[in-house]
Every structure is written in structure tokens, then in C-alpha cells.
Amino acid sequence: MFQTFDVTARPEQGLDRLAALRSQLENEGLDGFLIPRADAHQGEYVAPHDERLSWLTGFTGSAGFCAALHSVAGVFIDGRYRTQVKSQVADVYTPVPWPDVTLGDWLVEQLPQGGTIAYDPWLHSMREIRELNARLKSSQVSLIESDNLVDRIWSDQPAPPMQPAIAHPEEYAGESAQSKAQRLADGLRKGGQSAAVITLPDSIMWLLNIRGSDIPRNPVAHGFAILYDDARVDLFMATQKLAGLDLGAHVTCHAPEHFLDAVQTLDGQVAVDERSLPQAVANVLGDKIASVGDPCALPKARKNTAEIKGSAAAHVRDGAAVVETLAWLEAQAPGTLTEIDVVKTLEEFRSADPALRDISFETISGTGPNGAIMHYRVTEETNATLEDGHLLVLDSGGQYLDGTTDITRTIAIGTPGHEELQAFTRVLQGMIAVSRLRWPEGRSGRELEAIGRLPLWMAGQDFNHGLGHGVGAFLSVHEGPQGLSRLNTVPLEPGMILSNEPGYYREGAFGIRIENLVVVEEAPALDSADADRKMLAWRTLTFAPIDRRLVVPEMLSPGERDWLNSYHAEVNRMIAPRVSAAAAKWLDAACAPL
Image (tube, rainbow, N blue to C red; front, side, top):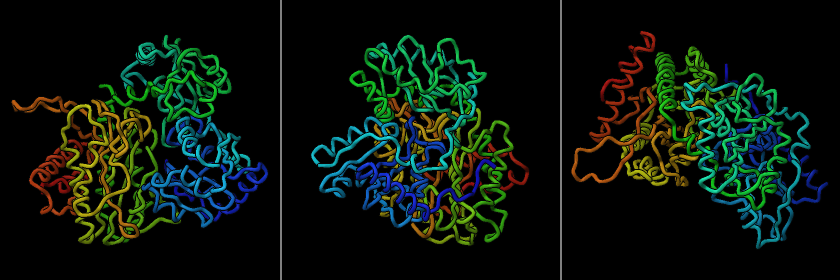
């Protein structure tokens, strides 16, 4: 099993740990300390060594932070985690709805007479600290840098990861590492930068055509890199991770402890992404900083032909594993299975593929009320039985050598209720609307994502997460800078892979989410003399049936019905030859036209 079901944090542990942290504050004469869910590389995911937020508070979400003061400790969480946090943190912690309430405003409110807040400069980005300082400028609250106070009290903190990295073959990457470095170096020279400092793990993996296993579920290795305008690369990574790798003559390897010394010697303007550059590095760069973004970000997001081909192939094989699981699941009587049973079975079917290297995230298998917890992780203690009338939210994915998958299906257990059917159909309508969309090039996710919410909005409903995120090519299942959210302003371009995943969640009752991965392509030309704009469209990569038992056909327009029937016909055509006879028979019925 890739996935375990152990309880990784307990709310009651947070009491003593917070008390120990407050003792450190007292000893240092501080009024507070900031604890982000971050590491020195500023990616979304962290290794067990860097799970300080979870260790201290019990909150295990993939985004958030804690501001621990003497009298109050705020745990800041976005809309995805406002249900989850209630069961994970002790009463000594106060959940704070973020970004509705900003950290700066909260600190000023909590410390009206002023105070000194410490932070670890490796764990906060340059942009984050600049914006926080700007908000605190007119107050009596000040920020200072400090070593990490949580590390002082975490006596059994896991060691930093040191797993070996592996080569990512050019047949999957579609371009040599030397070519990538040269292409990006050309861009640096044109922009007037002498070098770029790169800290994001997936950017370094993409640039060098390597993969690692320092972070669970993400094939990345921790390190830092400097790309120069002559296409040389200095890589700062532990030697044990690089044994046996040939990175090319343009790459020179150094020990990580020499990274800041190398940064200090850089001349001219240095390209950085201020959203991911640690403040500790910004301190060294000073006025050399050119905030032009990570040079790897957009090239990595624009998948080339080989990456798209690999991703498409991975999705077909992954779809076969999902179909085998869904066929098995429907054959079981309500009340006989648990959430963990479903996770184990799905992983067993996926593991039959020799190209599978890991799951792409902890499988979300939430039935009944657990389905309303958007990023629910089932444990032996929370493991629920799939009862008649429940909905099961099954959100999962695989890390294959040729691609990363992410698929969500909501499944009827027995006979669900009228409200569930209505909400499911609205979510499906939103997913179909996005899938059918054509849009003028240059548009961003912010301009498109409301289309997936419209059917819910018309019923006075909504969901508290983005409509979709970028996805890597045998890399992070959450990839930037592309996305379908209210905050994303990056224009969508051909080759970008994103998720299309509207949902609906009723706390304490049920959850619904339907998710396919889609790739941006040039839209087919219209047979119309009036068409005068270059348009883009989606091609769906995910192939697995959508539960027809949850659809209210009368709610669908003719166009929506045609899309669903056409999609199901394609699913049957692509997947049936790859599954067992029993699953193929089930699939034929599951894909029957409405």
C-alpha cells in the first residue's frame, strides 16, 4: 500500500506543544511566532521534517498557518478546510477564516498596544513578508527574524529527506535538459538578467529532467538552483541524492550549505519569483532582485507533444483501474464496505500498472458526512461504512512515469435522496459547461471559472474551492501558475493541463464533486464567416463514467445530454478493451445513453 490510515495528529497534543512554544516566546521576550505550512523551497507540499503546522496544531490541510501569541493562537484556513479544522485542533486554537481575515489585520486587532512577532525567514516568501510589513507599518506591531522556535521544542522531528533522485527520460520529457537551460537563458539575457534563483522543487526537476521522492506523493527532490544567462546551472543538492546521475556538462553540483554564498556573489539583476523566494535569500540578494517570476513556471505549464501524449496514455490506463473499482463497488451491497476498503481496492487495481510510481495524493474516500470535508483523509478512527442513501466522494490519482492523474467521481450508495440528485445534476451541468467551452486566447482562469458555478448559483448554492488547478507531467498534482480560480490572472495557453472540478458540500450531510483533467488546445475552426478571433478549447483527458443514477435527466438541456452521451460513448470505446469481462459488461451499462 502507498497509503496508510494512521492518525497523524491528535488535537489533544496541541495543548502541551503550544504551552512549550509559549515558553520559548517568554524566554525570548517575544509576543508571537508565525508557523506556516512551508519549507525552505516554498512549494505547496512539505516533507515530514517540515510538517511544523501539523505537529503543533493538529491541522493537516495542505494550506494554512498559525500565529501563536501568548493569549491566542489563530489557525488561518481557507474555504476548503473550514469543516476539517474543527475536528483537528484543540480549543486552545482559534480557527480564522483566511483570506477573509488577513494576518496583518488580525495581529493589529490582537495586539492593540503593539508587540514583536518573530518568524523563520526561510519559511516565508519575500512577497509575504513585504506585504505583512506594509500592513503593520502604521501599527505598533513589528516583525523580526528568528531561528525556528518550533524546531527547538520538536524533540523527535524527522530528519530531512535524503532519497536518491532519478533521471526522467527525454522520451517522456520531450526536450533535453540542455535545451531547456539554453531556452531559458536566452530569455534571461533578453530580459536583462544575469541569472535566476530557483527554489521550487518541481521547477528544478523540470529544468534538469530528474525526479525524486523527498515529498510523499510528489516526485521531487529538495535543492536550490541558479540558472545563468549562458545556460550554466549551479545545483545545490545533497550528494547522496545525485549518486549515479549524469546531469550534463552544463550543470555543476554543490553542497546545499554553499547556496547563500553563491547567491552573494551574483552580479547584475537576478530573476526571482517573489512568491516563492524565501526571505532569507532575498536578504542576501538585496537590490539585485528582478521580480520577473520563475523562468521555469510557464514553460513547465505549457506541456509539449511528448508530455501531452504521455499524460493521455496514463489517463487511459488510470481510467481502466478506476472502472474496475467502480464495477466492483456497485456489486457490493450497502452496509458491507468501508471507506478504507474502497481506497485499498482502487490502489490494488492501479498498482497492476508497472508504470505506477505512487499515488498522486492521499485518496479522498468520504461517504455521507465525511464527503462534505473537501480534503478528507480517512483513518482507522474515522473509517465509515457506506450506507444505503449515502454519496461517496472518491478523489484520487496516480503518479505514472508518463503522466500524473487526478479524477473525482461521486457515487450513489443504494438510493440517494432528492436533494442529492438535484445538487449532483447542477454540479454536472457546471462541469459540462466548462468542458464545452470555447474562449478567445488571452483569457485567464479568473474569467472562465464562474461558468462552472452558474448552475449552482442559480439555485443559491456554491462551493468554497477553486474550479480547477494546474497539473504537472509526472510532477506535482497541483501545479502553477495556471488555474481556474477567482484569483488566477495567468492567460491559458495550449498545452496547459488543468482540472475541471465543480462541487457542492453540505456540512454534516453529504458532499459532491466531479473532476476531469483537461488540456488546452486551439479550438477547431468554425464554419462561419463571422468568426474573427483565435479561440481555445479543452480536450478531456480523463475517461471514467459519471454515475447516471445521480442525474436528473429532465434538468439537462439537449446540449448537456448530448455531451454526456458522447463522453460516455468515448469512455466505453477507450476503456472497455482494457478491463476484465465483468468490468466491461458493467461499463457498457454505465455508459448507456440517457
